[in-house]
Length: 159
Image (tube, rainbow, N blue to C red; front, top):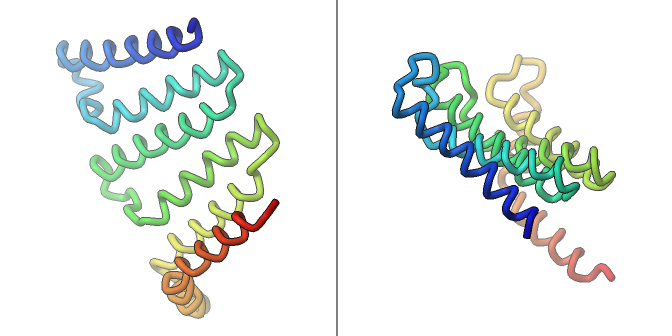
């Protein structure tokens, strides 16, 4: 129960600081008065909780929420920010990698997801000598649901 109280305590402190800054209208943090900031704060609380309680599943959740908050904030405030669906795949891959630092599991999955995301994101603007990658990306975009079905069946059949 103490671990749950610690999590709620950190969460309440973070939300309290958010609304206090919003109420005080501190000019340096005005860009952060939005829901992505709340996502970032909840992610940070999960990461703090993970370091305090040694629960590695909080690492995945915290990294993903922090990453999503940073991404949504970046899309809203920075014109150079990439708004592509593969960013979400990238964030899940990063979350797997961060969790694998503690659990020693999921590193390969994380690296595959990050690699795929980089390929998909970089396929937006390719130099002429790499245009063949567009065909591969189109093929993957078309048939990725089949790959998910096959992977799901394999996982169900695996003992």
